[in-house]
Length: 187
Image (tube, rainbow, N blue to C red):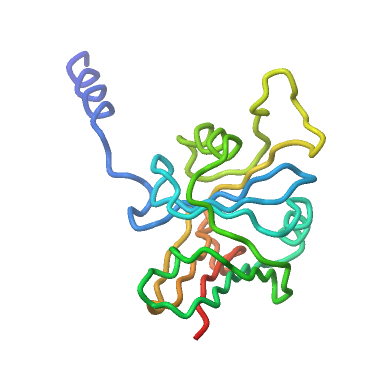
């Protein structure tokens, strides 16, 4: 009996195959409830984001959209160059469920708040909730609580001018993705 128990411990201690697909991308939507929402896309939860942008919409409005129905976010670049990948573009027109919400600029570097969120969520592959404030003295700022939603996304490259990210439902529901993010470069 002791021998089989030791074998069991040895088996459990071995690194196993990851439960999530390696090709899945991690997407994080976060922001203060009364502030603007940020979108960060990473190859995996431990890596530096390959794309970070502050969307021209309030976090509370996006949360209402997500509670009501399926959300489609489209980012459209009007740049005429085709030398860069579509995610390397800087200026984006942002649409949420077909309505134009404004313009955004992709960031090259993370702000202190964004870096704080990425460090806190480093080990989280999917989930939603409220994060502690980056300031230890202040638990709630004037903009409200810092909320987040992190999920795995299937990345689909349509062409050199388009990419899409479809949220993978953790429960395996066949009803389709609740959140889809599209990146399009118009010609």
